[in-house]
Length: 256
Image 1: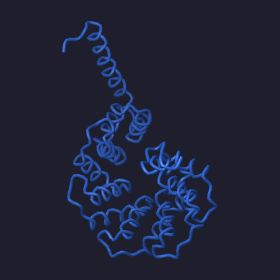
Image 2: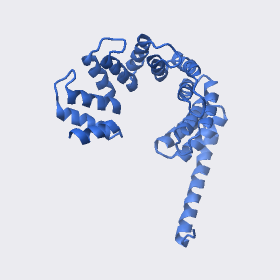
Image 3: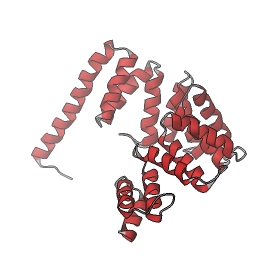
Image 4: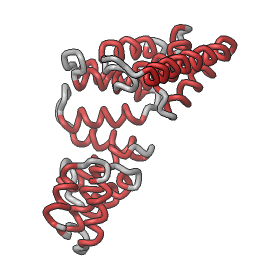
C-alpha cells in the first residue's frame, strides 16, 4: 500500500527516533555493571517499553548475568514485546538456573508442569520447584502444594499440600491463601470451616486476587458462614469482573 508523503516522513522519523534511543541507551550500558544494565531494563519494562527492556536484558545476559537471562525468559514466555516462544524462554531460564537463579528454577518447573512447548513432566517440575523452594522462593513452595493437592506426579496428599500452602501464604502469596481457603471450604484433608475460608479468601482478595473476590461474593450472596449481604456480594463480584473473571461477570448479569 502506497503511503502519503507525510505518512512516509512520520514513519521514517519514528524509525530514526527508535534507533537513536537504542544508540544512546548503549552508551551508558557500556560502562555500567550488568546489575545496573538489568535495572535499566526492568525500569523500561515497567514503563511498557519492551523493546528497550529487551535491549538492556540482552546486553547483560550476553555477559552472563542470571537476572537478565531470567527476565528475557519471562518476556518470551509471556510474549512481552516479542512473539511467545517457549523454546527461547526455556533456553534463557536454563542459563539462569545453571547459575542458581531461584526464579528460573521455578519458571522451568512451571513450563514442565504445564507442558509449555514440551511434553508435561511432573517429576522434572517437582525437581525444579524443590530447587527453587530450597532457596526460599515462596512461589515454588506454593507450586509444590499444587502438585500434592492435585496428585500431579506424586501421591495425592492434602496434608503436605496444606503445609506448603501455609508456608507460601505466610509469605504473602495470594494464590496460596486462596487455595487454603478452598481446602477449608471443600473440606480437603481438613474439617470444613467457613470462618477460616473467609479469612484466607479475604487475605487473597486484599491483594487483588480475582478468584478470591468472586468466591467472597458467592459466600455473601449465599450466606455461607456469613449473613447474606447482597450489597457486599455485588461489590466483590464487581471487583472480580473488572479483572476479567467470567464467573463474576455472569453472577452480576444473573443476580443484579
